[in-house]
Length: 267
Image (cartoon, rainbow, N blue to C red; front, top):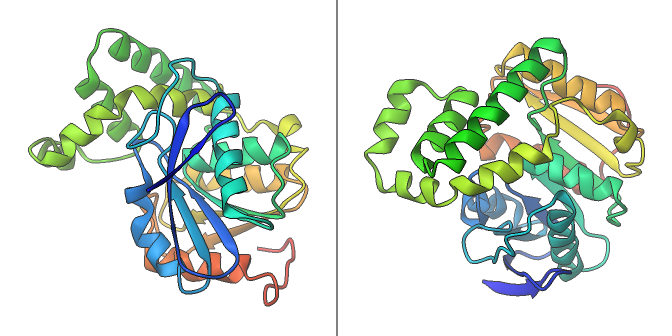
């Protein structure tokens, strides 16, 4: 992997593959560049795809002074390495990061996100507050395994699936990233869609959800698309939070191919 220094001097590791217009993929919670590899491979025939280890993950550094602004600077550094006219796609909480960066002035014209896990509404905000409090208690106690279990439960992973995962080498990898769950949690604020802040998102933005995702998740993506000045919403039939790369890739390729994509607001 190549490395670039973020604004505060933290090294950020990234991988480049393919040939064509530059496209940066931003991973979600407990993900790293390797997590995005299947999607990147499908997009590489049409784009120069950059995947990267977000701060505190994989081969990237971590200053220990995390803030949303630092991750925005990290993404800006990777976009700078990608070259002129780069586009950005963010998965889950990585989508929230992508939107925060664009709202802060990241120079991209096209942005797409898949199910940023905002939880608007009274019950959603209460759920987010309770999960945040529990996450911090677990991390403060050094219970990385408990933090991973909480994240998996929040994302709808069945208990029996989590139990099977616990018995694999992947569990240790997740535990090693557990501290970064606090970063992703902070990216989402209180869980509401930051309407006022996202009014500054000038990029054409595609907000995607799965047709089999939960009703609150689908509703949140529609609220997000409505909050974006140039937002468009799309539902992928048969998909859930864990979207199939082979289904998502053609949708992204169509959107990011500026010369063939006819942009409009209708879903």
